[in-house]
Length: 233
Picture (cartoon, rainbow, N blue to C red):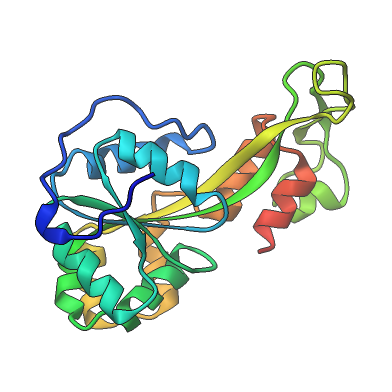
């Protein structure tokens, strides 16, 4: 995957209609991503394991892939480039909110960051349950409690079969949370709002990592124990 190194060579990205190949993404977050990818300029930042696949999917939507924004200079260069094209970059962060705070700390111009930043995606990975042998079962005890579900809620397990070579698993599935930088979030960033206030606004409509993992467990895509691990950070 090529990285953009010279902002002067960037051309505005064409708007793409095809959906991203990111099966672990919730419908609400996918709509947020669609709105972002419909824009012709701005900065998207992705953090967490497995970001290469996510950046490839964003490139298919017309974004220019960047390197890592881990210093003031690299972030300033990415923001400059984002004035001309839709840029997708990597960053280090535990979750979307901590990444937002890091970006704000690194930015030499907080107003430019608030103006150019469009979306922050944080992701974790978990094994996807084998579709051939998975089956529903009632959750009891700690699993349902740790996931915030009622006792007896339906979750899924996969004992293993010939299709999955007895593992009960397929490939790795990415679990996402996202922060869309709308006008209200832009003002919070510029005004120096703290993490709880940023999170309160960000996750009014979009799921955080815990909610996204819980939803995938209930849909039978990941095992309850992996959803618990992600939920507990």
